[in-house]
View 1 (tube, rainbow, N blue to C red):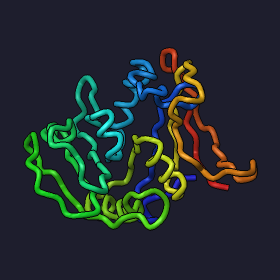
View 2 (cartoon, rainbow, N blue to C red):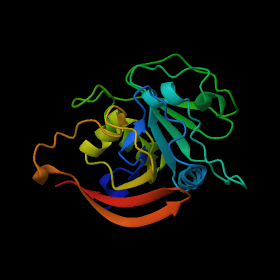
View 3 (tube, helix red, strand yellow):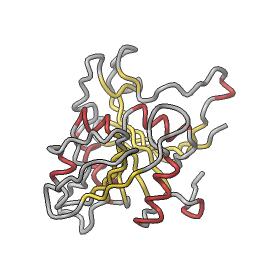
Length: 230
C-alpha cells in the first residue's frame, strides 16, 4: 500500500533498528550500537534518497542525532531534518542546530518559541503546529505532513524515531513502508520495545505486513514491508 502526495502527504518510510526480539535498547537505555556498520551505512544512503528525515524531541534528547546523510562522496543535496518538539525543548547545543550549514532544519512546536541562531549558515525554519487531539501528547501529525508537502514540497519522508512517535505514525495510518534492520542479538523482555501499545487484543486485529525485500548487511538483515492496517 503506497499513499501518494495526492492525499496531501509524503510517502512515508518508518526506519527501525532493533535486536532480534524487537528491542531498541537495554533495560538501562544502552543502544549504541545495536546494528553494525554496514547497516548504518545503508541508513545514510536511505537518508540521501529521501526529501526529509523526521524525528521526535525524545530521540534528540536521548541520542543527539545529526540526521544528515554522511556518505563518501557526500551527496549533492542533504535531506531536510524535521523535529517534532511540542514544548520547544530543542537544545541550542544539539547537533541538529549546530549543523545547519550542512542541512536545513524544520522545527515544529505547539507554541511560540524564542528565535534560535543557527550554528551554521542556514536559517532554522520554525512552525507552530496544533497539538494532537488523540493518543499521546504530541503534535497533529496530519497538520505536520500538510506543512511539509505545501511549504517544502517534500514528497518522500523517512521517520527515525522512538517508540512513542513510531507508534503514533503507525496508528494514524501514516506509514507506507517499514524498513526494519535487525541484529542477531537478544535483549530480553526488560529491554525497550520498538513500539508502544497497538491495542491488539485479538489476532484478527493485528497489523498485516507484506514483505517486499530481505537483504543482509554484515551480521544484520534488512526486511522491507508494505503496511496495511486490517
